Image (tube, rainbow, N blue to C red; front, side):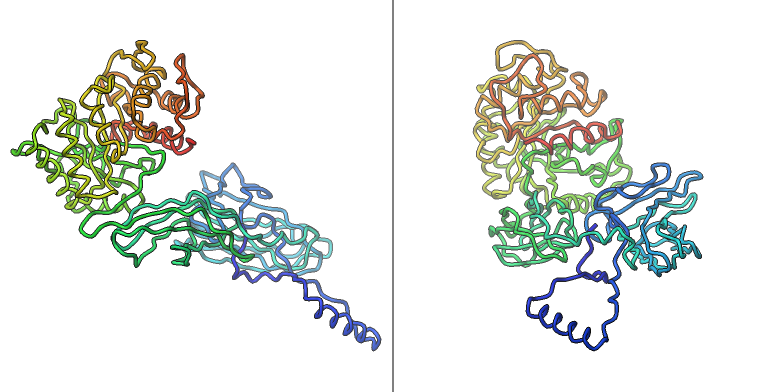
Length: 573
């Protein structure tokens, strides 16, 4: 880990030519008068990989007890986390070159459980110090003297038996150079990558980016002017104007200087009177959250893992007015989950860059939109829920019939009210997307300019035709890719196509496939690799991603689906 600009470590710096000339003259004069004495070398930090920027290089941890983490860190981008277990106190150590008959200062920043810092093999008195545990970074420091024949010592840190894991960062063994030389100082870091806009309000935009090795901080720019700074990989720019587009970029900094700015990203603040606007990632994972208990793990929204980018709250309820919907949280069925907690969790998910939408329909849904009046009732009621709860949009999961003419009208009316940040997803059954003449397919094409993604349900289906006219059975790579091809070649943009599957064998009556099959299908469509017997004639790198029913069944299965598919979706080109 590279040190921050505030480090007390001294550095040798080159002097300007003029100053160097004066120094030479002065030295010559001193030599003539016999006043020159031997110069003392500056103290250096003799520890190697002192901040764990190079993983565990130069360090040895007993019983594989040590690991590198990216958060929390004291500085830079990495720290050591070591976990005592049984009779192992999670000792991590390093051999450090030193000079005989010399005094050194040993220090480290620590956090977490009981933490010891010490040195052995000094040739004099070995020393140690400790912390009883801390929730914030605390500096441990001690000093030692080497013996007449000591050229190497072992510095170490460890926890205590049965206690919590500890964190350590920024080691220093400061004193005369023992022969290894001080590690090079920081170089100007690279520009951050992965800059993305998250949740917005009428006056703020949340941003996140990838960590940069060697960076101690970041500067965030709005329209070319510095707006704020951050020591982590996220920041929220405030003081903005409602319904206004801005350009943002970020640079990385350390003691050596500032990187060039990242590629810019655009974001628009929310309109007055609407909920937060959260950008959907290029490749996204959608999960349905159950507002009922059907034997799957009961969840709060806060329990849904970060692998999910779009969370579809299932489901809205029909009202006595045709086309209109409302929402009733099943507090009793969800173990006392309150309306206030639910609303707070929506905001928290959006602050983390996630989209929370309301799903309409489901297997037992009875919402019907087949007239102008019902289309208006639908759009008005959905928009009212968006304003009330802060939902980012709507999911259409009408499994008992859909009228393309009036659903198109309803969604266009909703878009006119909600604005460009509206998220619209669909979850048709396989039979609904076999032909562009089907009502679901027609609806998707009718609203293509405002549609986010169609996550067809590749389950509870039986055999279906692929885009090559061949029949494919569910439960295979070919079934997923050959049927997705119909949508991809039938008029939808690849970014509007996702693969919908059950999260576990219990999540659907039939059609479950393992996460590895889902990932293979994604690779086949996006990159042309890992295909089965069906291989599309071209690739679709901007394919949106995948969907699952449901986050609850995923939780029941130990989140095996999201842990495997989520990272894979994010790795697509």
